[in-house]
Length: 89
Image (cartoon, rainbow, N blue to C red):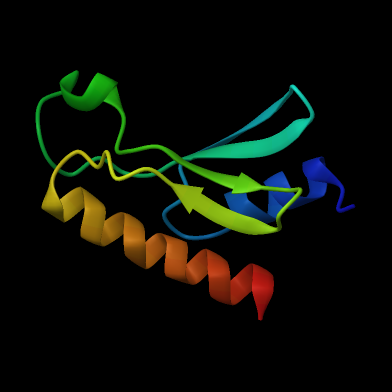
C-alpha cells in the first residue's frame, strides 16, 4: 500500500488542489481534496466546491456530483484530469 502522507504531499503539488485532508476510519483510507469554488456565495454548497477524494485502497479519484455550479465542476474536472495524469501515468 502507498504511504498516505506521501500521496497527500504529491496531491498538494498539483495546480488547483487547495487542500488535502487525510481521513482514515472504518478500514478506509482517503485523502479529501478541496478545489477552487467558482460559483455561488461563500456558504453555498456548504462552502465547498464539491466532494472529491483519493481512495488509497483503490488507487483512484472518486467524487460526488455535488459541484457548486457548472464553472466549479468544469474547473474541478480539469484538476482531476491533471491528478490522473500526474499520479497514474
